[in-house]
Image (cartoon, rainbow, N blue to C red; front, side):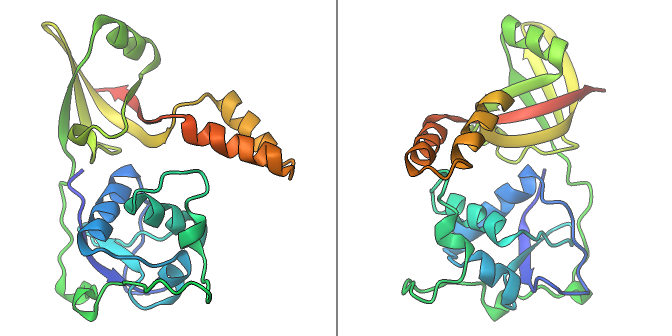
Length: 221
């Protein structure tokens, strides 16, 4: 998806429409935060004038304070289970200076024409085993940090190439997540909910040891 951040606005700006924050949108926001070296909290995201990113489709993406804390943590290279805590809430004791978008990046919907046709086409070479799995499940797991697929998102097309065969799909869903089953995820959640610090620490450590993947759900064209 050809997403990019074109400005920043207020969380409750009535003149800017909101849209779902899919994986491609999150990647565009991460790029913008890193490019401009921003550092601010989920509280700032919701309460300060330019805390909310607006993408080139003319729509803003909003998060909970915890959700934005995750985004800011990822932008600063922290993918740990609890990394969001440092960036989620207002902390008067934190003396690290904030860096937020300047007035020059204030989004003005009156002077902006939303961009359309943002979908992209991607190609991925696969082996026979991967292809057979995709044909059976309509799902594929790709490396989380492969730059080829950084911006792939819902609605984009993915062509799988295996030898002389080509299979074209539309991306129905795209999620970056830890490579674990639902049962494993529920097991770790249960450990966290025990309020036993040793078990909570165990869950965090197991979570952080599990690699990330890019999981795509596909539909045939």
